[in-house]
Structure formats: C-alpha cells, structure tokens
Length: 408
Image (cartoon, rainbow, N blue to C red; front, side, top):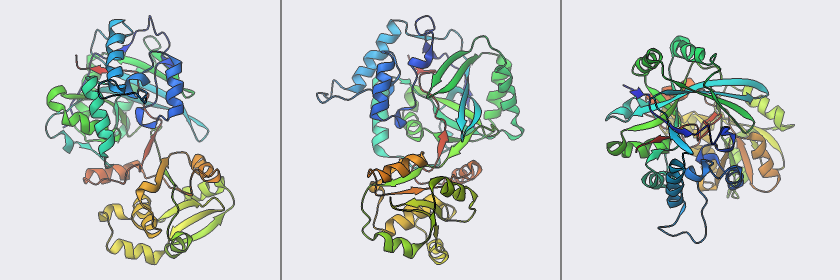
C-alpha cells in the first residue's frame, strides 16, 4: 500500500522572506544556464543555490557545487532564513496558470511518502532512468541530507472525493503563503486538521500512485531508504480537471545518413501550410504513428505507412503494448531507419521552440508528437512497462522551494 504522512517542513521564514517569488524556482532538470543565472540574481537565498548550484572552472573534488549547497543550507538555517514548522502538516498547493490561452488552477498537496520495502509495487514508474542524473542527485543527497524538491505523483480518485475535500481548504484566505513563478500564481496552506489528514491517508493507502515527474529522485531516495525512510512528494488527483499532460517534442541535431529517402520509404508526408494548422491536424488525428515534422524547409504531417506499421508490430523492439505508441515508433523505427540514434536528439515541450530551433540552424529537423492520455500512461505503468525517456510533460512543473524535508 501507499503510506503517506504529514511532516514538519522547513520553509522560508516569512519575517525575512515575506514574498516567496524571489526564492522559489522550477525543478532542477528544466533549468537552463540563462535561467540559472536569473535565479541567482533574484536572491542570495534562492533555492537554485541548493538544487542546481553553479559550476566553476576551478572546482575540485572537495570544493564544488555540492559543497557550496551544503554550506548554504547550514548557513540559511543558522540565520533563520529557513525555519521548521512547529506542527506536522500536509501542504496544499494551488497553482494557477494558462494552458492554450485558458486560465487553469491545479490543486495538489505535499506529504512524505514512506519508502517501505515493496513500495515499488504500488508506485508505478513509466519512464526509464539514466545513470548520470542519478549520480548527480546522489551526490547532492549525500552533501545535503534533505529532500530539497518533491517528486510529482498522481493518484486515482474516482468521483473526486479527495479533490473536493482539499478544495474546501482553498476558501480559507488566512494562512496561505503566496508566490509568483513564470507569471503563474501559487498559494500554499499547511493542513493540520487530523480528520482531513486521516481521510487523505486512508485513500492513498487504497490505491497505487504513478510518478509523473521525478523518476531519478525516487530511485535515489529508494536506494537510501534505510537511512532516511521517506521521500517528499507532491500528489495530484487524477480527477483534477487541470492536470495537464503535454507531449515532449524532438529536435534532431545531426545529419541523417539516409535522410529524406529513408523517411519517405517509412512514412507518408503531407505538406502543412503553417505551424498552427499542423498542430490542429495533430490534435485531430486518431490513428497510430502520426507526427508533425520539419526539415527547416517545409512543414509536414507525417504518418507511418500501414505496411511498415504492420511489419513493426510483428516483431517490435519494445514490448507489444508500447509498440504502437508514437514515441516508440519514432525511436524504434523511424529515427534508426534514417541512421539516427538518441544521442542526436534534444527534447522540448515547446512546439514553437522546436520549429524555431530548426529555422535558426540549432537543429537539423524537428519531430512534433501528440500527447499520451494519462489513463493510458497509468495502465501501461501498472503492467510494469516503461516508456521511452521524455515521453510525457506534466505541466506546469511543481515549484521548488515551497517546502523542504530535512532529515536532521
């Protein structure tokens, strides 16, 4: 079962940091160097200095971003920049944002996920992990014994009973801390009501959860479960109407050895007049193996040829339930057929940005994908199946710096 519990979070002291806007950041794995620099300038206490500190040419095995994170963490606690809450709580997060021009508000909560033996049977993972990010997060955990950022999980909530109970808390204006991130507003409440906490705990104990974001952090934490025992996690009900799952697009950075000829042998290409029209077409398509594509000269609606699809499905390189997914067809059939591998691919959730990268010469081609429905992702993960890396983008990301779970 999934066991969660409230905790006494370390949070920014409202007397010294009355506005969280200057000290929170996106998660470490979506921050580029320009944004890192902006966050450094925003405040000497921005959480970026803990989760993704700068690297310098004269860094050594002893003096590096992990050592600096350790010093900052200790100094901020000593200076009462960070204070531990007096009472254990669940932390309700209301995140208001725009999606395709429409305002949305997503509600979730942060709690500790107990890392008991066998928990992996009830915490579904849908993406494969890589060694380098796990090594990085391990070094940070060893330097700073704390969960500095929550992982992101979703849970079944048939009828939305838990979501409705949490929604009632948002009517309480008092006690909410506020922040703005990327133009989006965030409010945070500490829930200490024993009855509500017990209701949430009972429900989570009856379901399996899906990791939406944070697979590397989960595996690192699970590997250290004998030392620390729990992992700070953000939970969102699958009944939440503003739970947005976007596709992640691909920018190809290398010249294809087989190129256009191989592509046309594998796929049918239909020119599209412009990007909005192509995205509209993609949203309306229901078949298998459908993409948007640009080589910098022309936009295309691309469909895997029926004979190629049938041949692939006879003996796919991935388990059959995954084989017909667009992302599997792209990485297992199309790109290898063009003489390309994953080393030649960059990832972005911004379709316009992918298109622009090719136009400006920062990429050779771009592939635009459709989103995978959340219910399908959950069902595949429940079978123990892992999608290709970077298959889903749960939007928006959970801001870092709202809560910290320190082990000491």
